[in-house]
Image 1 (spheres, rainbow, N blue to C red):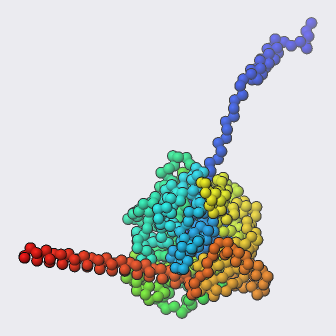
Image 2 (cartoon, rainbow, N blue to C red):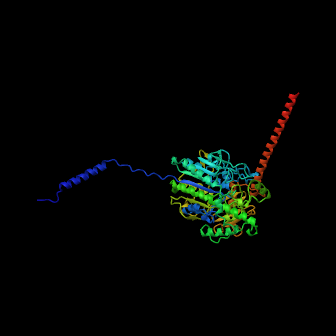
Amino acid sequence: MRTTNVPGRKGRFRRTAIFFGAALLLAAPVQAQPEKTPPRQPNIVILLADDWGFTDVGAFGAEFATPHLDALAYAGTRFTNFHVAGSCSPTRAMLQTGVMNHRNGLGNMPETIPDEHRGKPGYDTVMNHRVVTIAQLLKAAGYRTYFTGKWHLGSDAARLPHARGYDRAYSLADAGADNFEQRPIEGLYDTAAWTENGKPATLPKDYYSSRFVVQKMIDYVEADRASGKPFLASINFLANHIPVQAPDSDIARYAALYHDGWTALRQVRAKRAAALGIVPAGVPIVTMPTTADWQKLDADERAAAVRVMQAYAGMATAMDREVGRLVAHLKATGDYDNTIFVFLSDNGAEPTNPFGSLRNRLFLDMQYDLSTANIGRRGSFSAIGPGWASAAASPLSGYKFSATEGGLRVPLIVTWPGNKQVQAGAIRHGLAHVTDILPTLTELAGVAGHGGRWQGKDVEPVTGRSLVPMLTGATDSVHGDTPLGYELSGNAALFKGDYKLVRNLAPTGDGKWRLFDLKSDPGETRDLAAAQPERFAAMLADYRAYAKANGVLAMPAGYTANEQINAYAWQQQGRKRAIKAALWLGGGLLALALLIWGWRRRKRVVS
């Protein structure tokens, strides 16, 4: 009789196999799961333009071509209310340290400081040793650190970038230099003070500034690639500082533009910026008192003015092309997605007219080919002047050196292509400041700050705030209603929420304080001081507290930055002439002494 509930031979074998298999699995040692490799810290590329106005990028309203900067802008976040200093060195020191300029030593620049202020606390005219640079912080955290281009924060061995945290550095210690050859700005400096790793350097024969600083940076990055460490690459362009110079093909590209003049361009830029969402539509704009009437210029004046703006546009496009070459290289090496890009300008566009006095014109005419056909080319010396500088800042008022929005507000782009916390295509209108860059980058990189103490000594604490909440979209402002003060060369401002208290000396102002609502009036056209006396008084008290805490000094009567630069230049020329005269006189006296000695010797021999 067959019993169906009794297991057969095959069933018993199957169950036995399962039993022993399970026992073996339980007895076997557990294999450790491989640990996930933590993502490498991001590379950081800082692209610092020189003297670019608020709308001097296509993504902010420019008519000239900046496709590679535009691509970074649309892949990341644009800041429309970002502020720097009114001239280069103070901005550069704040960018490097996250510390306000009177605390980091750049209460003024060597070229613009009055003699009465030299050596006073905060007026070192160089970046002092009480601050820690971003290169020092990142290097201590395992980064490779590189610097190329304009430094202008000190020229002695202890203050050049190689001594301030940069592993490799090819830098210019001066405010500017020629873009085609190793030549200084004649009249301002004796030499073009380029150094590599702290030692005097010689530029190559095929040198063009934008191409060179990018290629040198690529060389540095590749030289140490085997280390596997992330890198900080600080690329500091000479474009578009005086002298405005560009390759011929880049100038020729804009032959059809700028014939309608600066006032027309100012209107066009304002409309384009509004269409891009950079500023509100229909914001009122002012005409600066230093802007000449285009229609009253004669034909030769207009031709020269058109040509210099074409060269300015060409110079910007040439710089942008080099940014594109760097980006292409980082894509080819696989670094692009894990690289944070930061683009900004050090101040607004340069209004100085170097030919404003007959003395300057005669001197420059002896040093350069100033013909209209040569503007922007090798051997030229040119500047866009206040008319085009005002257009470059449109729709803002003012330009470089002043505390107007055109002097202090510049484009800022922050992009991290492979990290979605930095929103693509976003535009942020909240207040941001150049001191915010360092804490932003250290937070994104996961690098600790110094908290006011570094390598066993007290240092100036970082005053900036991280912009990460703005980059992620968590907020449109990290400063809120906290007062943020500023002063340089007597031009001063205090920001508080949407409001700005501002004072400008001549030639862009009259020394009086004014109050503006920047949200509705970024062009600073409606003074609210009388209409809002309580706010005006409170903000003035805030500014005075800032000035006292930062050791801000009052400027001598009649001071202007423009006149001080001219005085500095002629002092330099006087010093050079004195040295030449001394050498000539010394040589003459030596020759006379030798002549007398020889005559006496011959006389003794004869006798």
